[in-house]
Amino acid sequence: MGLSNSAIRDVSEAFGTGDIHRVSRTIKIVSRLIWFTGLLGTLAVILLAPVLSQTSFGNHDYTIPFMVLSVTLLMDQLCAGQKVLLQGTHRLKDLAKASAIGSTIGLIVSIPLYYLLGVNGIVPTLILYSLMSLCLSWYFSRKIKVEKVEISYQETFKEGAGMLKLGLALCLSGILASASTYILRSYISHVGGTADVGLYVAGAAIVNTYVGMVFTAISTDYYPRLTAVNKDNEKCRIMVNKQGEIATLIMAPLLLTCIVFMPIVVRILYSGEFSEANDYIIWAVCGMLFKLASWVVGFLFVAKAESKLFIINEFAVSTYGLILAVLGYMTMGLKGLGMAFLVEFIIYAVITYVIAHKRYHFYFSSSFISIFVVQLMLLFGCLIMVLMTRSTLWMYVLGSAFIGASAIYSYRGLHVRIKGTK
Image 1 (tube, rainbow, N blue to C red):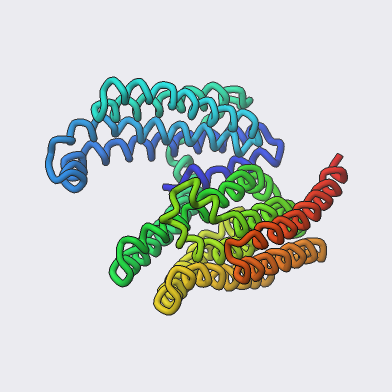
Image 2 (image 1 turned 180 degrees about the horizontal axis):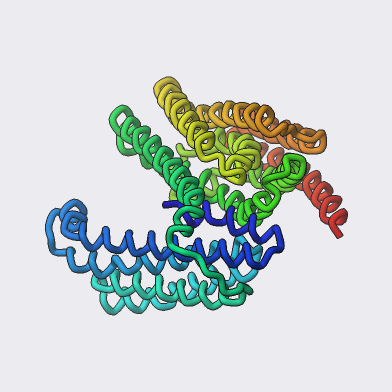
């Protein structure tokens, strides 16, 4: 029900007041909702185990393993709840430790289990991984200071309704995005075949997963801080602009590097047979800068719990994004898909900005605009150069010059801002 994202808002907002009673009350509400949704998910999997086995494998042989695995839903939900508390109270170092240590131990445990048990090691591995993640998150979250508070279950669901409402909106957003992607992949498969689907999936993975890690890393700190001041539009405006400046300075040199060296990256991550995916990637990478601009502003909708507005906006982008992608692929193949991604997020950035401006009196600072324009000019200049030289020595030489210019500009900008915070 999206509590791993929506509950951060309430915890962070309470933490920002400095009121220990309010923080304790919010944490207790979150904990109860986490237990309720975790148990609900576990029960649902137990009851639906025969159906899950039949639809997944065509028989009922895996009914019992599905029932056993149901406990991971409860443990993962409880773990997510503990991480919500860490992120909402700005204990980011502990959050990073819990995630990093959990992944490392999970790897160490899973390899021998898979080696010794093969397919039969899947269920115990997943259960042990969930258990270890839960223990680690509990170990770090227990350091959070709270006081004992009394709250009825009726009050829990009444005060937690906002979390559930926003959480469901975030879930629906994810479902819309997944549905849009599924329809697009089906269309590509029907028109161009499975080879083009593979190329698109590989390109999308590089653009959205590897480049998108920057978004994930930044949002871990940005979202709770924005939520803490969500009632003050002026403070929100300042924070969004500062975050936009830092994020643009960090991401722009990475985007230029992707454009220039993507042929090499694709060969390393996949193989030479996936080189055609580069036609999609170089255009989509340019769209990531506009996605960044819309992303920092779009967090306002979540921070202010505007769930209805958030869903309408996400439904709109899923709709016109799918239409643009289909038209792009129909006319220019994979390159058209990349161009469609770019156009989609230019439109999305404009719409998100207009809504935020009218609703919260938001506007971009001159500092952000100057940084964005400079990096955008370097990005498009680099794109044009790559399209003209195409995998020649000149492409790498001139491309390195563009990357160097962007990196120097970013370094100076980051140095000034980091120095100014000390």
